[in-house]
Image (cartoon, rainbow, N blue to C red):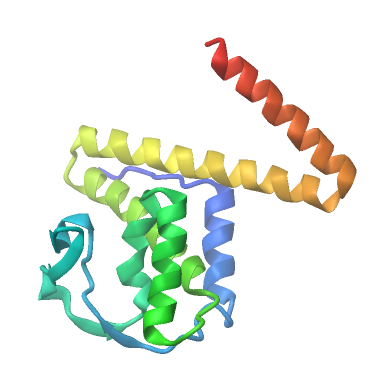
Length: 171
């Protein structure tokens, strides 16, 4: 039995555009862990003392190792990406975009895993994550549209955000 999974045109178009963007894929390969997440780090007194899980060790895209960070506080993410570039002595301007793509594709893989294993909890989780991603992309698209409108667009966005804050406050 086959299950059709629809990611939506906005996501598919986004992924196709990323794949075709040759600038995005111009990076210096390096040794990567290949399976980092928050649990991979040993920390003592606020300092990283070790990294676990080197079973996927490879030469590859450093964005792969940083993709998991994108679920953290945005300020911490900015700091981590900046610290990474500083430590490597590089300025990979596409690093975050590639990490974002990997994060999105990992979400799609989670959905496919849930479907393949017929695990409804995983499918429901992944569908929720994909829906949130599509909503976020729509919101960003609207912001970009209003940004192109200049000061008038900025006023519209500020008013809309003020309404959202009021609605949330009284919910």
